[in-house]
Image 1: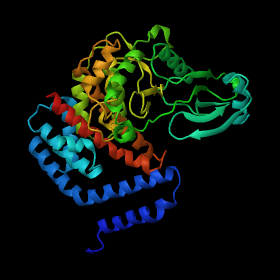
Image 2 (image 1 turned 180 degrees about the vertical axis):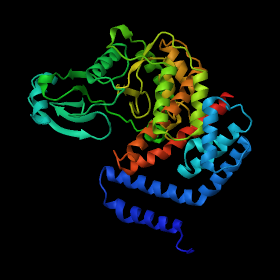
Image 3 (image 1 turned 90 degrees about the vertical axis):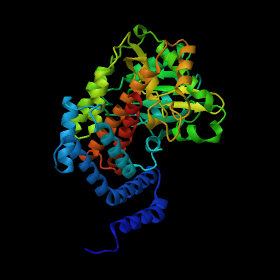
Image 4 (image 1 turned 120 degrees about the vertical axis):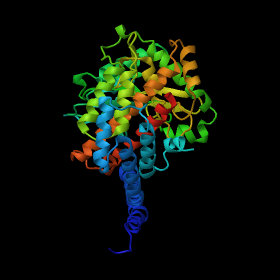
Length: 122
Length: 324
């Protein structure tokens, strides 16, 4: 595969285009939507950079928690089933730590400046 | 059909004695389920709130005549609300609507939390919010229009249905539903609640603080702690560090509530409802994303709000950690 431009560089180029060329011509609600579009691209960029490692770490924690291997989606579904049925809950060793670590990684991708992230991660 | 301008002009003498004309009729932004229009009659600035023509309204919303009656009932208890000037009848040609006096001020949470103009009044706001809720909660439901009653268990059932219908696999939601269901408090005597008391629906003024409580469409009967907790949900703090709306502390809110005649509510009960509130806002984010996913609303805003679901999950984790 090619090494450059990276996906991140392409996203940066589009963000730069929206911010410097598109947004200044927008009016009313479109100004807000242009900002949301930039935020969406920035989240995609972070997901490309950080998503695979976060998902691999989550899958490893899930495998330890559930006692068997599998891909993330499958293991995550099993955890949801166990929490729904009551087979596991927040007091089950490892459950809370897994949920906390996973959501910290997810919010770092979705909204790295969210106050709740800083509150949980001093 | 008459234009809105003509209909409001025909109404003008009943809004301001001797007036004959409605001027500067303009649509204000904001308010997804109801339209808000500003206009002027004589020297008076007025607001029209109406159901969009042909609009069905949202499922939980009370009718506009009910909203107007609740605002008047709150005013009678001394709560700061706009003055309801006229509730529109069918022959007014405006649709389902009411007219109220315009209240000046600021509703944007980020400005209340950060702007220098509010620095002096900010320490008083949480206590005022408590006092205003005590006034609203003092309305006798028997004297108000009939409203739905909900408690923690029925709210959880409603939002779990939403979550399961949208269908994501989110373990924090699963754990939170279970945790909240296991601890659902029993509803004592159902209290009249505003139902959406938070930054965005409260008009603040730098010199007085809380100037008016707006947007009554989610009013219902329920647990007083629900109203006290909703403004504490982190999503309404707009980056502010303090728990009540980003601007105040729990103790100030609860002291203000009790000092104004509210029955004592424990912090534990507020935190329970705050947890339920974060979960509820998370489900609302999922619903808004679902309208993008279905193609009903293809805007980037609807897509991106789906990514705000995780903010409610991190808030849930913080609240559940605190409760352990």
